[in-house]
Every structure is written in C-alpha cells, then in structure tokens.
Image (cartoon, rainbow, N blue to C red; front, side, top):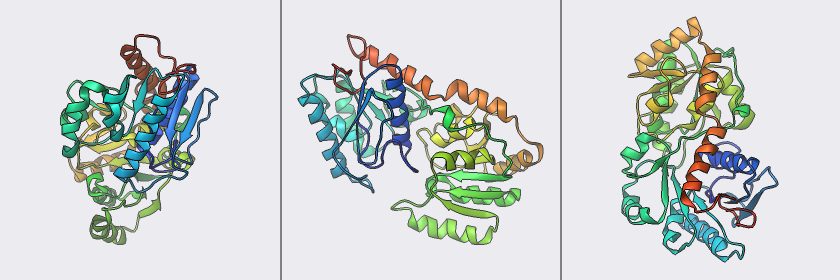
Length: 353
C-alpha cells in the first residue's frame, strides 16, 4: 500500500487520502491479510499483520512532486527487490504509475484528485499497466477515467459516534479555499442567524482568497469562529454537536470525506449539488441538496427550529459508508486482478501481497 509522503497515516488532522489508506490497511489486516504500508515518519499501524516502511523521517509538507517521485520510486524498488515477492501493489500517488510498466506485480491505483490536464496523457498511456480506481462516478466522468472501477470511500464508524446536535451551531470543515465555498458557508449561517464554527486553514495558494473573502466576512459575522484544523475526537465532537455541516462547494469535488463523517454522527449535510454530492447525500435522509446560499440558509433555519432524525441519518450512513464496505469492495477488486487468492494488499507474498 503506497500512501503519500506528505501526511502520516492515519493523519493527526488534515489528510483525506491518508485517512482512507489507514482505514484500508487496518481493515485488510483485521481480515487476516498481511499488508505493508509505504508512508512517511509519524505513521503507525495498529495490527500485527501490518508492516510500516518509511523513507522520510518526517512528513514532507507542502506537497512536492520531486519528493513524491522519490518516495514512489523507493517503494517500487522495495517491492521489486523483496525476495519473498509481492502479490499486488495498491498505489495512492500518481508518481507510482510511472513504474507500472516495469512491475511484474499487478498494480491498482486510486485517483484521489480532480481532473488534472497535465496528467491525462500519462494516465491514457499507463491505463493498460494498472487498474484505475475512481472514488465516485462523477470523478470518473469528469476526469475522463474511462474503464476505472468506482469504489466509494468509507471510514470506521466507531470514530464518529451519534451526536445530538446540542451545540446549536453549524459546522464547516475543510480547506479555506475558494472551491470549498467558505464564504458561502459564512453568508448562509449569518442569514440563518445560526452560529458557525469553521475548522480548517488556508493552504499554500489560498492566501489571497482567504484575506479577500473570508477575513472580512468573519469580521462582520460575530457568530462565526475559526477553530484551526481539528482531527480525531475533536473532529467527531465538532460534527456530533452541530445542527448541520455546511458543504457549499464550487468545484467538482471527487468525494468529500467530511460528508460521510458528519452523516455517521447523525448530522445532516447541506451541500451544493456539485461533484460527488448527489452520489453521497440521500436527499432528506442524510442531508439536503441546495442550489444557493439562500436556500442553504433556509434549510439551516428549519433544522435549527424543527430538528432532524439523526438516528435515521446514522443508520443510512452505516449502510453505505463504513470502512468494512470499502474493504469488501477492494478485496473483490484485488481478487479479480490476481490469479490466486489475495494474501496481502501491497505486502510480501510470504506474508501477503
């Protein structure tokens, strides 16, 4: 299992890809598969059937394509040089694809990003050397990942217990970036007269948007508060105590993990109908699709006044978004890619794939 060199597995705070990788590694190990995780320093595996290997002692943030290539090359070299052999490689960084034609081991590659034109030529050329996995049907279409196998994300439900929404506020959780629609979240909460708690921060390249659109709104909206990045129990607490999660995206979001984390807490998601949102939200059961910030404000006012069937929301989320379902889907794909039963996902064959 080749993760990124940028964020530890599991991530202490920000890190969607790494959260999914961690859940997949642990889930496979719990089923008796032996897994080797290639990640960065600070990572950990909590099962005796999972092994951790690292090249970099610390997480290499911010992302750097040269570091990613070095990390991926080292991981592939480790696979090819292991005398015991590997049954299967599952990569989560695009740089690993460059080595796929050199591997005599089947490779699966999960695309975690939106459409990136610079990568399209290599994706077309290398598609016959690896099995591509899309994380939503919308991503597969928008990113022109023809033939990719769709496997939706899942997370361990125990980390997101049912909450009661007693905090009386709305939550926003994510990067403070234009495509995430932070300004719409502030506007909607202000119009609904509901407190908003924002967890996240601007990443490199988002500073201009943050200073121009977010900071002035925060100055005017007295009931909007920045919390910084949160993770683990703090994130689950934030979501569970919220009336709703606001997700007013302005881009083709490939998936959006925070939506399913919120649903598992019983907290409905109010989201713009972009990207994977219509695939993830069961309208009226786990959230509501909104066309504008005004409609989002109207929905938020009603939720604050009338409440929501949070138990039904969680039950539906358990059916669709558990890590166990995600692991099942991956095992089925792995078995279709190898002529023998999958002993390991990305680990030595004597111990697995």
